[in-house]
Amino acid sequence: MQKLFSMGLNRISLLIAIGSITIVPHGALGQSSVLRTPWGSPDLGGIWNHGTATPLERPDHHAGRERLDDKEIAELNAQQRASDGALARRAVWWERGLSDGRTSMITDPRNGKIPYTEHARALSRSRPAPHSDGPEGRNLWERCLTAGIPRLGGVYSQNIHLAQTPDYVMLLHEMIHEYRIIPLGETHNPPRGLKQWLGNSRGHWEGDTLVIETIDFDSRQLFRGLSLSSMRLVERFTRVDANTLRYDVSFTDPELWSQPWTASLTMPPSEGPMFEYACHEGNVGMTNILEFARLDEKDSGSEP
Image 1: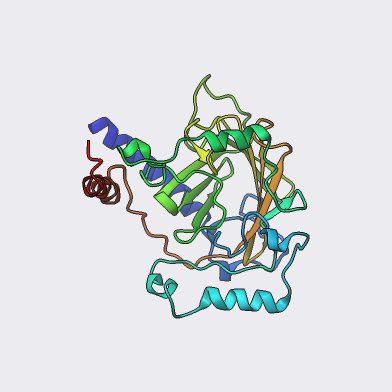
Image 2: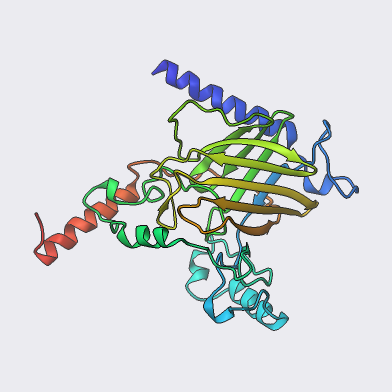
């Protein structure tokens, strides 16, 4: 137990050390077109928000349209900012992202749709439905194990704290409070058979863009119901200006998708602070889910 406690303290110390090196107030950033760290890399540090009202895939009623018109954008964003209705009752923690005018986050292919293979569609149809016989029947997010990557939009806890050193980049995700400490410049050479919830990541710079490549996801990690065990994920972070971080992410898995596909969004800075997401395996929410499932069984007469 003492060893585990010590390991936990060491991890916390590393996070604090990384974060303390690179946090720069957005208002204090320089006037140059490319903001840089003291060691010359583009400065991506800060807390960024990936909330958006733009859907991942283009809705059928917008087929052939890449952008909304000004009136549609204004109406959609007015709804997102509305101070009445059901959303307002969740205003303390409900984050309402705004539309940037695009009809989909997907930029490639041009139709704004995920290019599923027939094999992927068959897998999706055959996947067992979630159940409440026990915690294992619920998804990993409900069990507070992982929310997975990438993070594209959402309804709350949409902040990412990004910090840098010359040799590492750290991404602390507000949702489920997961963090990734990613070495820069190394090639993928993980122990054979080692699969992780958030995969195995390595980063490098391509000009002024940070590129993070991730493989070796745990087979239980899903994206839209499909296992990511064979996926290669490539994320690109580019500091556009003091108030904009561009995020592009590409997905590759020939078994699931007929071609690599890419989604993109821009993230504004968040003032913070970023609070702990108090979620853990066996949390009260899971207890309630299972308890009410038993009550439903009793009421319906299907109790074992």
